[in-house]
Amino acid sequence: MTKVIMGIGGAGVAACVIWWSVFYTKVLEAMGATLKTEDWSRGVAHFSDCMFWDRPQCVTAKAAANLTGYAPYEPLFLWVSAGVLMAGIILKLNEAWQRK
Image (cartoon, rainbow, N blue to C red; front, side, top):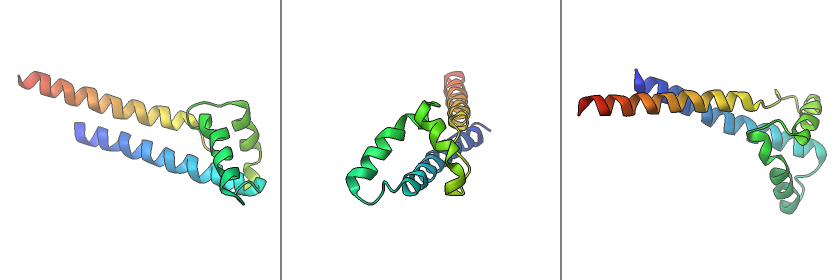
């Protein structure tokens, strides 16, 4: 059961990273900021906090979500997935501790 919980948490974290990268890449494309590597790098740095928090730039990007056709990224799902992963790790450590 512990491996299942860790698997769900890990898959959730991976899915959130992919969701964040796809959504904000599409936002940058809609803004025309992917034409040069430097523009893309600045854009990713600008939206990097959005993976964990809802900052003002994230709210603006979510408002432009209609242009992308993608569901806006929500950091809450990353926190929930990370919590599930941590719960699985704690349960695994507890099992290892009990075996001693």
